[in-house]
Image 1 (cartoon, one colour):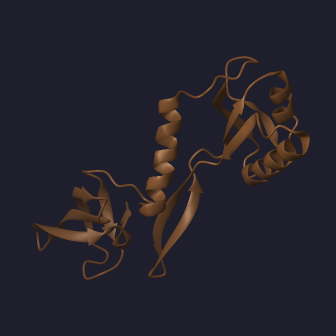
Image 2: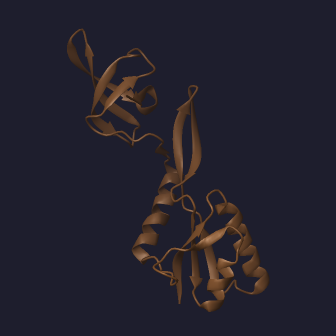
Image 3: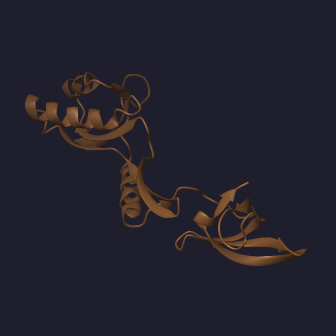
Length: 175
């Protein structure tokens, strides 16, 4: 029976391990037992130099997910791939991921492809500094967060009075 397993790799070699694993599985006849290899990533949006950029970030650096039928042959096959340091699990026996957990990882990957998440995460009550716009160099406190719009409601002290202002994520930075 096929299950999802977490394979630990050297950080930065996830793509190389994936391509070598799939290529060797095809040449050595393991394509039936090793069916899928996934590198969990998310799309991140940020604004640099006034331009919005979307980049990809691994949310489990150094790990890949492999759907396979685990037996002695497939275990040693995966362990001998260059860049693989081992399986995640107690002792020498790998533990499969629960189906709900793999579903949530795949769902998060798909959601961020459609709508990239912001690179910086803000919290209510956090202190920020405005770095662009008419309120530049003012400090404030976050009152409300609207991640779907990429906007924040911030209280800024102007002339001794607290004034609510709506700003975009890229206009502010954490203090």
